[in-house]
Length: 415
Image (cartoon, rainbow, N blue to C red; front, side, top):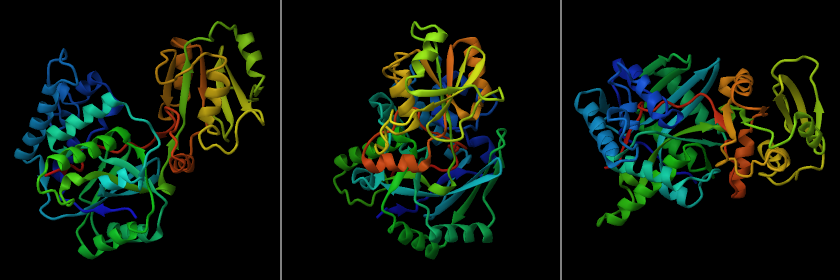
């Protein structure tokens, strides 16, 4: 059973919400963030990437950065930019992109559910990135960015959420420059909150879609505070972390494409010949960017030409949830043995391009600084769940979720 808990959200006053809400801290570097917040003192990036308010020479992981994040958060509360609800609530968070809607329930989830595998992960985390977010959560005394979770959709939950949306006005209704619309409702009915809690008590598993480092860090801060609390009961806010729960059938995963700097000493002709061992190579009738329409099929851009390459039967395991992923097939049968990309996490010859940028971005990269590009069929949410259920980890850069949740709409205070 999954435990969900309402909380007293800290959130922007409606008239400033469009200036406060910001893209997640990890989709941009510090310089990009500095440009984004120019002339906007309200942006939540002043909290989530507080190094932008310090001298550029300061290391982003310096203690001064976390102190600045804490001070900026408190200043936003004191100034009235952020307010805290006086009662515990659940919240509804809808995102609409290109006419597609996904509706999430904003709650606090339990660190024990993470420890007991009710909340399942599908990615490895890096200790340095974990430590960064541990410090950020600890100094701010708050979860400042929600964890993006999913679950097998339940009609009961959909009906309760839809009724709230139908009969209440949203507290925020904003369309940003990227043409993604964000709407937020407050659930203040004790009866509805109890019904939602009971509904999720029948949910066996929650899956981390995005936010593995934030999730692991929130759990470790909670454990740290348990250890230092003399009167620990398990009901303290630090035992829970900020999450948004989306039904799996509303989510959209985009392709996460690959570009490679060279052919590992091969000529183009030699490279194509080696590929033929495990892939069927064709030149599509209609030239132009090739977007695969089925699993086990890949697009390849080489020497100003788009190819379709399809994995041959018997060249990959069918039943292993990780090894049968398209990402794994390309890595195991081409990128590693032919192009010498042994570890895509660390090899500087490979780069990754999110599908939101379009396949034209692959052409641009090949023309400017790369040699070959591969377009991927998107990993499915069912693939992600299957890997998590097996206890295995997804290969790096397997999923690109759109639209992105904005930070700053909800903050969960830990004490």
